[in-house]
Image: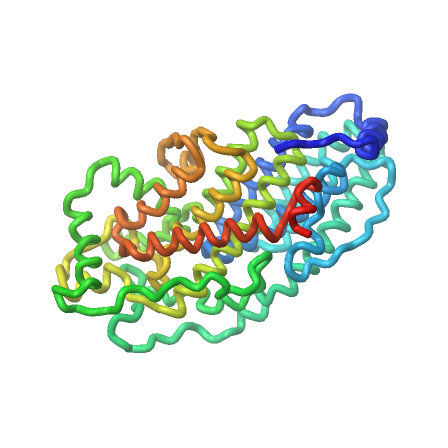
Length: 445
């Protein structure tokens, strides 16, 4: 990434330095506090058990709010207002005595708190965070910064209310068709299909949920000579011959936010990070390695988050169009009634693979921001009892995430290959439609 310092931006920075506190934790100027905020949000999302599509929405709006403040602080950054679907531009009366890092964090926490159930967890963390700012800033600068953050948050929350999410909470549940080859709830909990109307949520930069419609899945057939049967048998066969490395890959990318366990007569849930949460974690890891300041970190988080949300919208559009049966159901009925996949089958139709779509899209975005190769150590899953994994690039991580679904026994191969294609198209479209850098605006026009 290049940052060109013009006379205007130099003057702007001089004005900003005039109100900088004399003593402040260095982490305020790096992206660490925003990364911490994202990690706190992840913990709340895990605690509240939000589904992967809903979680992507919860990550997106706070990240947009923090980035909008960064765009005010850095003239080389372009506001997302006027670029994202339905996000109107707003003029803010910004006082000279304002500390932008505090305003950005305030905006992030204000929006995040409004989107979760366990608001107290985020509120308590924010209160602790504010103590260091209160002691280092003048009363005026502190108050102005909080007020600006809240004003930006209010604008973003107003924007969020128009995405059809709240209306979709009252839409009818998915009704099973009873047609052979269509999706059925799977053991052990036999949960109903989640978010069957997610394609009705307003995307950020896609023209519509169906903009990059996938080719139809392989025609269903239980004939052992058919292509579909062979694809199902591949899933079954991989499970029989799996290496320890393949198992490790499957578990590392499981990202099932609500895994049900049965012990005797007791059923209990194991909560874990969502796929989107994993990639938001990777964005934070990359920002730290690249030693981005808080503005660059806000850019990376927002760009990644909107990619993830539109990726889920595009993926879910296909899932409930094709409503394809999962390997577990087919294999139990036609190959081996006792077969159990390595990973627990998630409660929604098979085609296409969500991991393949959103991982490829996110990797495309992060590669645009950080370049390639960009080696990183992915420690996102350490908090959930798994070791780190090292990747030479974001694309390599996305490829592993995609194939992990075959190893886990929850996807046929076409869902992975076609999901990867869709994710690439979503990621490419983001780079055409949404620009964060002023020097790229000529391309957009």
